[in-house]
Image 1 (cartoon, one colour):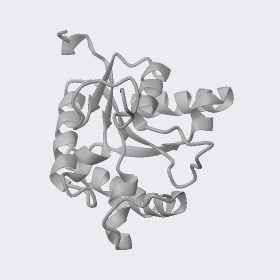
Image 2 (cartoon, rainbow, N blue to C red; image 1 turned 180 degrees about the vertical axis):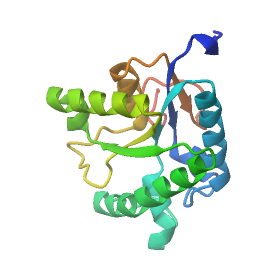
Image 3 (tube, rainbow, N blue to C red; image 1 turned 30 degrees about the horizontal axis):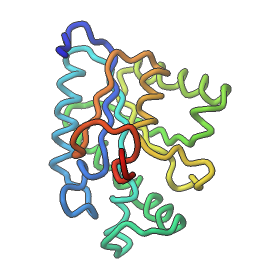
Image 4 (tube, helix red, strand yellow; image 1 turned 120 degrees about the horizontal axis):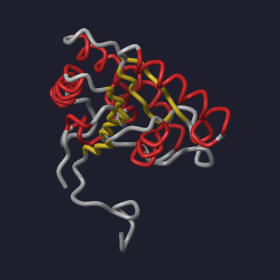
Length: 189
């Protein structure tokens, strides 16, 4: 499948934690973020509207908390996300500043993307930000998400955002080989 970039106006790019943290997985890789931002800046220079759906908050919060691996319990994951989300956005902001591109942070829960009144509000905010030339950086709000209200993965969130804003293209940047119909760790996926 070939894509004519000249026919694309609005793009959603989803990037996974492992892409942003490298092999170690417990620290943000500044070069990985800079490389992503270089691509987004190039698209912006071609008058494309871009939304980034970014994982990485939990991974970014591990090292400052003295953790070497992702915790298994929800409250520790939430604590890591709380610390890491600010670090993640600071790095995005710093990197986008090289191109004088303004970013915004939008943290979304499952309720936000499924409740009609919330969906309309998110759509309005995203469209307004895009019209203003801002690159919204979206992540699931892992700090407040519980098992009952978590969206689950940013791939699905990115797909919903793509539909919500009528984007022309969704790009998934990942280190997973291929497409799966379930979590890759699920037998038979």
